[in-house]
Length: 322
Image (tube, rainbow, N blue to C red; front, side, top):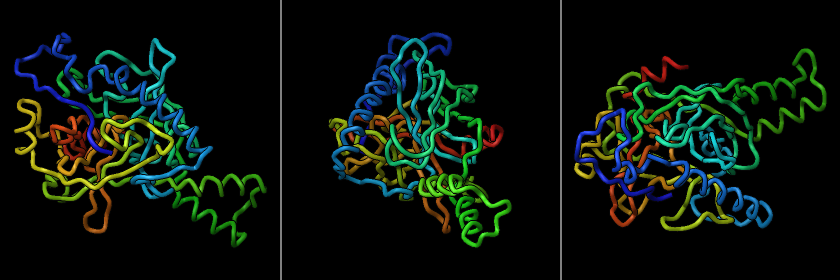
Protein backbone atom coordinates (compact mmCIF):
# COMPACT_ATOMS: atom_id res chain seq x y z
CA UNK A 1 0.00 0.00 0.00
CA UNK A 2 1.17 3.49 -0.62
CA UNK A 3 -0.89 6.64 -0.98
CA UNK A 4 -4.50 7.43 -1.70
CA UNK A 5 -5.60 10.56 -3.58
CA UNK A 6 -4.83 14.29 -3.86
CA UNK A 7 -6.43 16.58 -1.30
CA UNK A 8 -6.95 20.22 -2.17
CA UNK A 9 -7.54 22.29 0.97
CA UNK A 10 -10.67 24.39 1.29
CA UNK A 11 -9.75 28.02 1.85
CA UNK A 12 -13.26 29.41 2.21
CA UNK A 13 -15.95 28.66 4.77
CA UNK A 14 -18.46 26.15 3.40
CA UNK A 15 -22.07 25.78 4.34
CA UNK A 16 -22.83 22.34 5.79
CA UNK A 17 -26.17 22.34 4.00
CA UNK A 18 -24.87 22.86 0.48
CA UNK A 19 -22.47 20.82 -1.59
CA UNK A 20 -19.92 23.32 -2.97
CA UNK A 21 -18.40 23.27 -6.43
CA UNK A 22 -15.01 22.68 -4.83
CA UNK A 23 -16.28 19.31 -3.56
CA UNK A 24 -15.02 17.81 -6.81
CA UNK A 25 -11.48 18.21 -5.39
CA UNK A 26 -12.46 16.50 -2.13
CA UNK A 27 -10.87 13.02 -1.73
CA UNK A 28 -13.89 11.43 -0.04
CA UNK A 29 -16.74 13.13 -1.95
CA UNK A 30 -18.16 10.70 -4.55
CA UNK A 31 -15.67 8.09 -3.27
CA UNK A 32 -17.80 5.15 -4.38
CA UNK A 33 -18.11 6.21 -8.03
CA UNK A 34 -14.48 7.34 -8.36
CA UNK A 35 -12.70 4.66 -6.34
CA UNK A 36 -14.88 2.18 -4.45
CA UNK A 37 -16.81 0.71 -7.40
CA UNK A 38 -13.99 0.45 -9.98
CA UNK A 39 -11.55 -0.96 -7.43
CA UNK A 40 -14.11 -3.53 -6.26
CA UNK A 41 -14.50 -4.85 -9.79
CA UNK A 42 -10.78 -4.90 -10.44
CA UNK A 43 -10.06 -6.69 -7.16
CA UNK A 44 -12.76 -9.27 -7.85
CA UNK A 45 -11.30 -10.11 -11.27
CA UNK A 46 -7.75 -10.15 -9.92
CA UNK A 47 -8.69 -12.51 -7.10
CA UNK A 48 -10.29 -14.90 -9.56
CA UNK A 49 -7.02 -14.94 -11.51
CA UNK A 50 -4.95 -15.33 -8.34
CA UNK A 51 -6.96 -18.26 -7.08
CA UNK A 52 -6.42 -20.08 -10.34
CA UNK A 53 -2.74 -19.17 -10.82
CA UNK A 54 -1.57 -18.95 -7.16
CA UNK A 55 0.66 -15.96 -7.90
CA UNK A 56 1.74 -14.10 -4.75
CA UNK A 57 4.00 -11.19 -3.95
CA UNK A 58 4.44 -7.90 -2.10
CA UNK A 59 3.74 -7.34 1.61
CA UNK A 60 1.23 -10.15 1.77
CA UNK A 61 -0.40 -10.75 5.12
CA UNK A 62 -0.18 -14.37 6.24
CA UNK A 63 -3.46 -16.08 6.97
CA UNK A 64 -4.44 -14.96 10.47
CA UNK A 65 -1.69 -12.33 10.73
CA UNK A 66 -4.24 -9.48 10.86
CA UNK A 67 -7.25 -11.21 12.46
CA UNK A 68 -9.00 -7.92 13.23
CA UNK A 69 -8.96 -6.74 9.59
CA UNK A 70 -12.40 -6.56 8.00
CA UNK A 71 -13.26 -6.21 4.33
CA UNK A 72 -16.43 -4.31 3.43
CA UNK A 73 -18.19 -4.82 0.09
CA UNK A 74 -20.99 -2.28 -0.27
CA UNK A 75 -24.19 -2.49 -2.29
CA UNK A 76 -25.09 1.03 -3.41
CA UNK A 77 -28.49 2.61 -3.97
CA UNK A 78 -29.28 3.13 -7.66
CA UNK A 79 -26.60 0.85 -9.12
CA UNK A 80 -25.74 -2.83 -9.35
CA UNK A 81 -22.04 -1.97 -8.97
CA UNK A 82 -20.36 -2.53 -5.62
CA UNK A 83 -17.82 -0.56 -3.61
CA UNK A 84 -15.02 -1.62 -1.27
CA UNK A 85 -13.55 -0.45 2.02
CA UNK A 86 -11.76 -1.83 5.04
CA UNK A 87 -12.63 -1.88 8.71
CA UNK A 88 -11.66 -3.20 12.14
CA UNK A 89 -13.52 -5.76 14.24
CA UNK A 90 -13.77 -4.25 17.73
CA UNK A 91 -16.32 -6.63 19.28
CA UNK A 92 -18.01 -9.84 18.18
CA UNK A 93 -20.69 -7.79 16.40
CA UNK A 94 -19.25 -4.33 15.79
CA UNK A 95 -16.90 -2.97 13.12
CA UNK A 96 -15.41 0.52 13.01
CA UNK A 97 -14.75 2.09 9.61
CA UNK A 98 -14.93 5.41 7.73
CA UNK A 99 -18.31 7.09 7.29
CA UNK A 100 -17.58 7.82 3.63
CA UNK A 101 -17.68 4.07 3.00
CA UNK A 102 -21.47 4.31 3.49
CA UNK A 103 -22.23 7.85 2.34
CA UNK A 104 -19.65 9.83 0.41
CA UNK A 105 -21.74 12.94 -0.19
CA UNK A 106 -23.22 11.59 -3.41
CA UNK A 107 -23.50 7.79 -3.26
CA UNK A 108 -25.30 5.96 -0.48
CA UNK A 109 -24.85 2.33 0.51
CA UNK A 110 -27.76 0.15 1.53
CA UNK A 111 -25.97 -3.06 2.52
CA UNK A 112 -22.52 -4.35 3.45
CA UNK A 113 -21.03 -7.77 3.01
CA UNK A 114 -18.66 -7.96 5.97
CA UNK A 115 -15.66 -10.20 5.24
CA UNK A 116 -13.70 -11.66 8.17
CA UNK A 117 -10.76 -14.04 8.37
CA UNK A 118 -9.70 -13.92 4.72
CA UNK A 119 -6.67 -12.56 2.86
CA UNK A 120 -8.95 -12.20 -0.18
CA UNK A 121 -11.89 -9.83 -0.36
CA UNK A 122 -14.24 -11.70 -2.70
CA UNK A 123 -13.56 -15.26 -1.61
CA UNK A 124 -12.90 -17.24 1.55
CA UNK A 125 -13.38 -16.34 5.18
CA UNK A 126 -16.60 -15.74 7.08
CA UNK A 127 -19.21 -13.42 5.52
CA UNK A 128 -22.05 -11.52 7.18
CA UNK A 129 -24.67 -9.29 5.53
CA UNK A 130 -25.91 -6.17 7.30
CA UNK A 131 -27.69 -2.91 6.56
CA UNK A 132 -27.43 -1.53 10.09
CA UNK A 133 -24.86 1.21 10.54
CA UNK A 134 -24.37 4.21 12.78
CA UNK A 135 -22.54 7.07 11.12
CA UNK A 136 -21.28 9.89 13.28
CA UNK A 137 -24.16 12.37 13.68
CA UNK A 138 -21.91 15.23 12.56
CA UNK A 139 -20.42 13.52 9.50
CA UNK A 140 -20.05 16.15 6.74
CA UNK A 141 -18.55 14.63 3.57
CA UNK A 142 -17.55 17.85 1.81
CA UNK A 143 -15.69 19.07 4.90
CA UNK A 144 -14.27 15.61 5.76
CA UNK A 145 -15.44 16.12 9.32
CA UNK A 146 -16.15 13.17 11.65
CA UNK A 147 -15.38 10.48 9.08
CA UNK A 148 -16.18 7.51 11.30
CA UNK A 149 -18.93 4.92 11.51
CA UNK A 150 -19.93 1.74 13.34
CA UNK A 151 -21.21 -1.27 11.39
CA UNK A 152 -23.58 -3.52 13.34
CA UNK A 153 -23.48 -7.27 12.68
CA UNK A 154 -26.79 -9.07 13.13
CA UNK A 155 -25.04 -12.11 14.58
CA UNK A 156 -22.03 -12.40 16.82
CA UNK A 157 -19.07 -13.86 14.97
CA UNK A 158 -17.24 -16.70 16.65
CA UNK A 159 -13.75 -15.54 17.53
CA UNK A 160 -10.74 -17.80 17.09
CA UNK A 161 -9.97 -17.97 20.81
CA UNK A 162 -13.47 -19.32 21.50
CA UNK A 163 -13.12 -21.85 18.69
CA UNK A 164 -9.80 -22.93 20.12
CA UNK A 165 -11.37 -23.53 23.52
CA UNK A 166 -14.18 -25.52 21.92
CA UNK A 167 -11.77 -27.56 19.77
CA UNK A 168 -9.82 -28.51 22.92
CA UNK A 169 -13.11 -29.59 24.44
CA UNK A 170 -13.78 -31.78 21.40
CA UNK A 171 -10.34 -33.38 21.54
CA UNK A 172 -10.91 -34.37 25.17
CA UNK A 173 -14.49 -35.49 24.32
CA UNK A 174 -15.75 -33.36 27.20
CA UNK A 175 -18.36 -31.46 25.18
CA UNK A 176 -21.94 -32.27 26.04
CA UNK A 177 -23.76 -33.18 23.94
CA UNK A 178 -21.14 -34.51 21.54
CA UNK A 179 -21.37 -32.67 18.18
CA UNK A 180 -22.03 -34.35 14.86
CA UNK A 181 -19.23 -34.99 12.38
CA UNK A 182 -20.47 -32.12 10.20
CA UNK A 183 -20.40 -29.74 13.17
CA UNK A 184 -16.79 -30.70 13.87
CA UNK A 185 -15.87 -30.07 10.22
CA UNK A 186 -17.62 -26.69 10.33
CA UNK A 187 -15.83 -25.74 13.55
CA UNK A 188 -12.49 -26.75 12.05
CA UNK A 189 -13.11 -24.66 8.94
CA UNK A 190 -14.07 -21.65 11.02
CA UNK A 191 -11.04 -22.06 13.28
CA UNK A 192 -8.66 -21.80 10.32
CA UNK A 193 -10.24 -18.45 9.45
CA UNK A 194 -8.56 -16.85 12.51
CA UNK A 195 -10.91 -14.03 13.46
CA UNK A 196 -10.22 -11.80 16.44
CA UNK A 197 -11.00 -8.34 17.74
CA UNK A 198 -8.58 -5.41 18.03
CA UNK A 199 -8.31 -3.62 21.35
CA UNK A 200 -9.43 -0.02 21.78
CA UNK A 201 -7.21 2.46 23.64
CA UNK A 202 -7.72 2.58 27.41
CA UNK A 203 -6.14 4.26 30.41
CA UNK A 204 -3.21 6.56 29.64
CA UNK A 205 -3.47 5.74 25.94
CA UNK A 206 -6.66 7.79 25.78
CA UNK A 207 -4.47 10.87 26.27
CA UNK A 208 -1.62 9.82 24.00
CA UNK A 209 -1.14 11.54 20.62
CA UNK A 210 1.08 8.67 19.38
CA UNK A 211 3.46 11.02 17.52
CA UNK A 212 6.73 9.17 16.96
CA UNK A 213 5.16 5.73 17.19
CA UNK A 214 5.64 3.18 14.46
CA UNK A 215 2.26 1.88 13.34
CA UNK A 216 0.83 -0.70 10.95
CA UNK A 217 -1.73 0.16 8.27
CA UNK A 218 -3.47 -2.59 6.30
CA UNK A 219 -6.06 -3.18 3.61
CA UNK A 220 -7.16 -4.93 0.44
CA UNK A 221 -6.42 -2.01 -1.91
CA UNK A 222 -3.63 -1.25 -4.35
CA UNK A 223 -0.08 -2.21 -3.41
CA UNK A 224 1.61 0.22 -5.79
CA UNK A 225 0.88 3.89 -6.41
CA UNK A 226 -0.25 4.36 -9.98
CA UNK A 227 -0.45 0.59 -10.34
CA UNK A 228 -3.31 -1.72 -11.13
CA UNK A 229 -5.15 -4.40 -9.23
CA UNK A 230 -3.48 -7.62 -10.35
CA UNK A 231 -3.54 -11.35 -9.85
CA UNK A 232 -1.23 -10.69 -6.89
CA UNK A 233 -3.93 -8.74 -5.03
CA UNK A 234 -4.32 -9.67 -1.38
CA UNK A 235 -4.64 -8.29 2.11
CA UNK A 236 -1.41 -6.40 2.67
CA UNK A 237 0.19 -4.23 5.32
CA UNK A 238 2.87 -1.59 5.72
CA UNK A 239 4.82 -0.01 8.57
CA UNK A 240 4.32 3.76 8.85
CA UNK A 241 5.42 6.49 11.25
CA UNK A 242 2.89 8.60 13.15
CA UNK A 243 3.56 12.34 12.95
CA UNK A 244 2.28 15.24 15.04
CA UNK A 245 -0.85 17.11 13.98
CA UNK A 246 1.18 20.32 13.76
CA UNK A 247 3.26 18.78 10.98
CA UNK A 248 0.20 17.25 9.33
CA UNK A 249 -1.69 20.55 9.56
CA UNK A 250 1.04 22.33 7.64
CA UNK A 251 0.33 19.98 4.73
CA UNK A 252 -3.46 20.40 4.99
CA UNK A 253 -4.22 23.96 6.17
CA UNK A 254 -7.70 24.39 7.72
CA UNK A 255 -8.43 20.66 7.43
CA UNK A 256 -6.57 18.85 10.23
CA UNK A 257 -8.24 18.84 13.65
CA UNK A 258 -7.75 17.06 16.97
CA UNK A 259 -10.04 14.39 15.55
CA UNK A 260 -7.32 13.33 13.08
CA UNK A 261 -4.15 11.28 13.38
CA UNK A 262 -1.57 11.29 10.57
CA UNK A 263 1.28 9.17 9.26
CA UNK A 264 4.22 10.14 7.09
CA UNK A 265 4.41 8.91 3.50
CA UNK A 266 8.16 9.45 3.23
CA UNK A 267 9.55 6.35 1.60
CA UNK A 268 6.36 6.17 -0.44
CA UNK A 269 4.36 4.14 2.07
CA UNK A 270 0.80 4.35 3.32
CA UNK A 271 -2.78 3.31 2.53
CA UNK A 272 -3.94 3.51 -1.08
CA UNK A 273 -7.13 3.18 -3.13
CA UNK A 274 -9.49 0.64 -1.64
CA UNK A 275 -8.02 0.93 1.87
CA UNK A 276 -10.48 3.53 3.21
CA UNK A 277 -11.81 2.76 6.67
CA UNK A 278 -9.06 0.26 7.37
CA UNK A 279 -7.08 -0.01 10.60
CA UNK A 280 -4.07 1.89 11.85
CA UNK A 281 -2.66 0.04 14.87
CA UNK A 282 0.28 0.43 17.24
CA UNK A 283 1.92 -2.03 19.59
CA UNK A 284 2.48 -0.74 23.09
CA UNK A 285 2.81 -2.39 26.47
CA UNK A 286 2.46 -5.82 24.90
CA UNK A 287 -0.88 -4.87 23.33
CA UNK A 288 -1.92 -4.16 19.75
CA UNK A 289 -4.24 -1.17 19.85
CA UNK A 290 -6.42 0.49 17.22
CA UNK A 291 -5.57 4.20 16.90
CA UNK A 292 -6.98 5.20 13.51
CA UNK A 293 -9.43 4.46 10.69
CA UNK A 294 -8.17 5.46 7.24
CA UNK A 295 -9.87 8.62 5.96
CA UNK A 296 -7.81 10.24 3.17
CA UNK A 297 -4.29 10.66 1.85
CA UNK A 298 -2.17 12.24 -0.82
CA UNK A 299 -0.69 11.71 -4.25
CA UNK A 300 2.61 9.84 -4.11
CA UNK A 301 4.50 12.60 -5.90
CA UNK A 302 3.49 15.13 -3.22
CA UNK A 303 4.44 12.97 -0.21
CA UNK A 304 1.63 14.52 1.83
CA UNK A 305 0.64 12.66 5.00
CA UNK A 306 -2.07 10.02 5.19
CA UNK A 307 -4.92 11.06 7.48
CA UNK A 308 -7.05 8.84 9.71
CA UNK A 309 -9.93 9.42 12.10
CA UNK A 310 -8.39 9.35 15.58
CA UNK A 311 -9.95 6.57 17.65
CA UNK A 312 -9.25 8.19 21.03
CA UNK A 313 -11.13 11.32 19.94
CA UNK A 314 -14.19 9.26 19.04
CA UNK A 315 -14.00 6.77 21.92
CA UNK A 316 -17.27 7.99 23.49
CA UNK A 317 -19.11 7.69 20.16
CA UNK A 318 -17.70 4.21 19.66
CA UNK A 319 -18.55 2.98 23.16
CA UNK A 320 -22.06 4.40 22.91
CA UNK A 321 -22.68 2.16 19.90
CA UNK A 322 -21.21 -1.12 21.13
